[in-house]
Image (cartoon, rainbow, N blue to C red; front, top):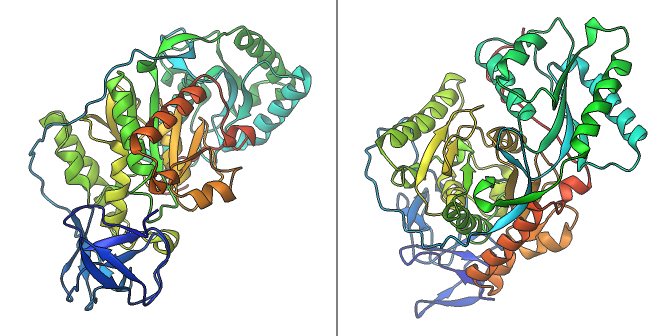
Length: 495
């Protein structure tokens, strides 16, 4: 493995692949460079001298500017460069043709075809509270059902607790209802019991109407204040739901039915070299099969948004993307917070110095396909192909939003590791091999091999095979550990 990587010919920094020490000498494009300082793995080394104010270029784009003179061979980090980003911007639609060369292989996987035509990759029984007050009841019902059935015939029995459903106003109340509705209707659930209290803002009967045309043989309601013993009544309903869902079987369905969320967290200097580009290649592959991918984390598009805008399929999608970006910036401004207070301490420790650098790595998960649609928070997928979704960078909030949009699984790249899982299979993909080796209980797939001379095409084929297995029912680490949570985006007051 080489000790450094210059990603783009125009870059004036290189990524250190193995730690370098002061006095080491490297050769770049035929020129010898003396390393001026100890530089950790994943961090940046100056390939040319930079004066204060000069742009620092990585991925072929400026990722900020030098705030002090930087010598050739110096360590480039958040202490000597600063973002170039500003506030709201005006954008012009300048489309470029998407260059994707993947063929449709007519592949299939074994999924659960639901009554409404949607496909699940899991067959689970869920309990969904309308309000946080009945979380305890939901948990008890799960434990009682598990004890009663013994060896479970389903992929899982789970309750998805949350803190909301009451004391909320405006958008917060509607966001709660939308996310809960989308969870209840998700095809990974073979059956759902909605548990309400009775006096909450998210009234059970109003929520029932909000579901629209739902499968009444698979979705039942329990209102705790209207029955003498909610546990007894709940178990009666759960027995019927369990019997119904237990009869479901997997059938062959085309890969075009697969919908996959794209997310990263705990990023490092390898994220934009290994795991994120790998997801981009997978995204292009899945779109070519007629499938769907969804990219979110809007604050981590700042600085790379024009790349996405140039790939919008038409002017209407471009306008939606502009609103997606500027509306999220206005959210920061409205709350008197700096728009570009990013990256995190963990990102900086891993080698990411500015939001532009983080965003240019983050958006690589979208590959090269056209952007077909833009979804607001709580909306469900309407168009196959690459979609953008409005949600923050927070891992659990964003992953929940991806699942609620209709994604059957979420792919989560990470350079530092995290154990969390949302309500759909949450596949952890490491950007570096040491993380994969040190956290086998967290990481499902290693992309670090890409800097160890594995060809990107080979890694892509390996990922396609692995994810097809997940779609067929192979459990990921979060499922094995039963790490299942949801988090709902909150922006307003609590009564």
